[in-house]
Image (tube, rainbow, N blue to C red; front, side, top):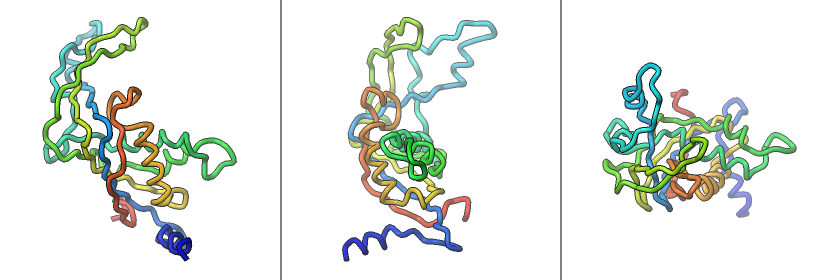
Length: 211
């Protein structure tokens, strides 16, 4: 009886016999600090002229390193969240092939519903300072300053799922949990920053472009 109830809950709405796409709203809670590092393209162009040697900014204006939504709150591109979920696909088998990972199908199935996802706060907690390895031939260490949110940050993100027959809500939430453990969002993910857990979700039938 319990198995039948679970199957019923997972069954997606259909139209003309085809499962309908849906939009999932995720609330993510940070289990590790998050680092911002948006590239200031305007500032990068101002610092160099024709034929000049390009160099990274020394001591940045921290405001230029963050994103903000229309309400002025700190934000991050929703595409960053989608990329985190897609990267976690390497831990799952492809649902349509005999071998290979789920990354290609996740890349096709998931679309950012909004350009930015909001943290709901106006100010970062502190500025993180550490030595980082540059991408030059010698990988020289260089002081790096980045705005930082401490553990406990929350993010609201909306993701459209256009292949619901492959990734229903419960399956996708399993992938979200894995992505939060192994990938994270923001800068410094390879050294453990930006990790998260799911702190709530809701599912709406359809996707915004259908409305």
